Image 1 (tube, rainbow, N blue to C red):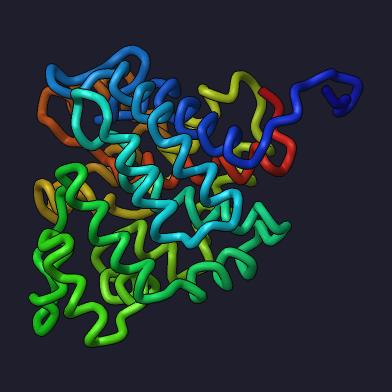
Image 2 (cartoon, rainbow, N blue to C red; image 1 turned 90 degrees about the horizontal axis):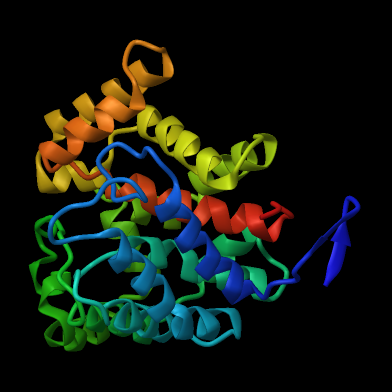
Amino acid sequence: MVRLGGVTVSERSVAQNAQLALLLEVTGTPKPGNVDREREYDDLRFEHFMAGAVGARRGLDRAAAGDPLGPAFETAVEGMAGQSGGNTQFGALLVLTPLAAAANDGRLSPSGVDAVVRGTTVEDAAAFYRAFEHVDVAVDDPPDGLEPLDVRRGSDAVPELRARETTLFDVMESSADIDGVAAEWVSGFERVFKASEWLLDGSGPVADRASEVFLELLAAEPDTFVATRQDRETAVEVQERAQAVLDGAETATDLAEEFVRRDINPGTTADLVSGSLFVALERGLEV
């Protein structure tokens, strides 16, 4: 136990904080369109996210121990997939594993995590591709000329990765203009670190702060998962509606109910919230 500001708190490991970030993210409510402790879908429930966070732990341990990033991520995804709901936290783990790796050796900063992701290898990319064999993930078609590197090919694409000497950072860089998590990889996790400051500056229960940060991020940029599953027009609508909530023109609860009915799931924004919670926890956010 340690004392911070006169309050006795548990001293958690890096991997424990990463796992706690996954749990805190799903407990935040309301998060319009996302599963939370009050809303879920028939085939994707709150319990699936809890189980996914538990299952991911071994991979988070590997990332925090300094193991190669790709295999650590694949291990986390394989464990996460060990529940009946399917894909719960693939994107969140893609955010958390490099952050945990950076935190392991005291480099949890934009420049530190940038060095981690730029140091990834072809074998890290191969493990990333294999992770797609553990769970179904909604992705866009690859850009022109990169069809042989379609992530949906899984292990079948690995020979091409090796032939082209494509690292995991290269893979993220090629998708950064259409995928919000990939964009974080090439920007030093800019939005994640900014949102972590909002969490630290906030007050009240952490889960409530997480839902507020979710709305702030959602209003700032179109969610790329919505753009993939629906279309760009819907993603822009979601962004505008989130801003309307912040402006007081709509309520977050009503918007959450509507988005669940319409099957609109801003999953990328939730992924970034998980990352921001981890950074904030590592920087002293009390739970």
